[in-house]
Length: 628
Image (cartoon, helix red, strand yellow):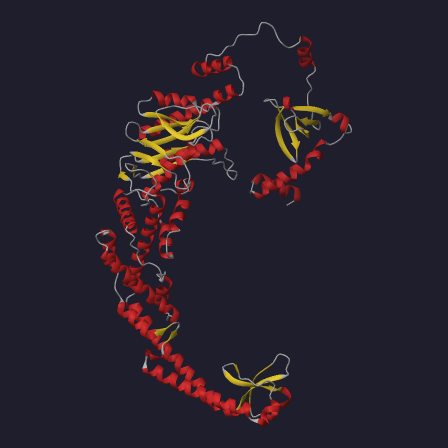
């Protein structure tokens, strides 16, 4: 499925909604990678998984996924030869315990979820590793009972620390030391037990200066009576670290020996998290399991667009009696939402999601879905809206096949109506003969007429209230609609005579070319307009009638009767009838005035833009000016 289709149909937004129901990053990562499948067997399997998950939820059974974290980074660390920290070992142990609980849960629910229960067989029970971790780690530290050696070392540390405290308390309580001390408390500095001594008396106290205060008035000294025990304590702490590392290394090695099994456990738990997220989403939207086929038949019964909570349900069908559907109707009547609904509901089903619709809804599994929706205008590539649409259609013509779903919004629009309609019909014919399933919206009557007369095409219209012209956002298949221009015109006061004449022109194109009996324009006004038409010159100051603002004529009238005018530092082309002379150049400037000076700033800007976009002509001109 191409990325442009997924983007235009807001597929990521739908995935983000489903992703919010995951309990861990494991499921979220899978949903991020999820793309619609074009394999009907795989789609059926995914839909079945979601249905089984939904049955568990409906029966109030809760899969114990809470507390299961993504331990992939920890497994990678071990695979690279690293040793886990105590907290990391605990996380692995929690994950293994979670896997064991999930395995027991799905085994017990085989009657509700046969497929999900079968997946549980792939989970490896590693309780013996759990037990080793639980015996060796308490909280975030290695437990003293992990080994006899560690227990012995820590007992020695306790005895040594007690001796240090005893000695240092004795030092503080000694009256002879009272005048030397700044404060009466013990402070651990750089791993050593110290007391604060006045700097002036530092030479009167036997011991080692460990640190000084920022102002230099206090020194933190380790009394000589403590030094021996401190040295012993440091050695014991080093032995403790070595023993802890041995224990953590042993546990890490034990985990590494089963890293492949743990990786499979991660994959299975990830799948469960994603499947249960789909099931929770299904519960939230009252979703149903759609029927599936691979022959292009779509039937949507009261389907709802997934990204709009309150929307008018859609009834839609294609691929049985007709393979191309042309939707007509007014702007803002819901045509685009119909196209997006068909597309996104199809993508949802192909991703294993339940959809918000009634029973008997059926979705086709397509090889590809192509869309041309929205304004594809490209400023960077200098493509107009029409050109970008045609470019997109040309690519779809190359890539589409018999098993493709095509969704086109306002096909052929953006150009001269007759040419646009003719081109659209020819393209629709080509897609039809390819065997594609095509849904297109249009305003063109020629396309509606073509669809009405073609045996394998069908028309559809967006309904609205005739009296208020309020859109109902309901699709009526088998009926062609219009843009409501005539209804609106009558409502706004246009006479019935003109309305009926308009209807006649729409159907027959038999226009009335008869001349009026006599001209309604006074003769002298005609003569005035014929004999006093002003020829605009470069430098003339003119009024832009459409904008109510003033500009300067830059280029005189061309063969299309357009004049180039400098307006707001930009050059625009205006029909000569849409401007009015205010002051001629002759009145504004001296006889020999260099008119090019009026526009030099524009030329400089144009040259800079040419250079920035790498124009060879611009670079050549720049080098010439600089004498390079």
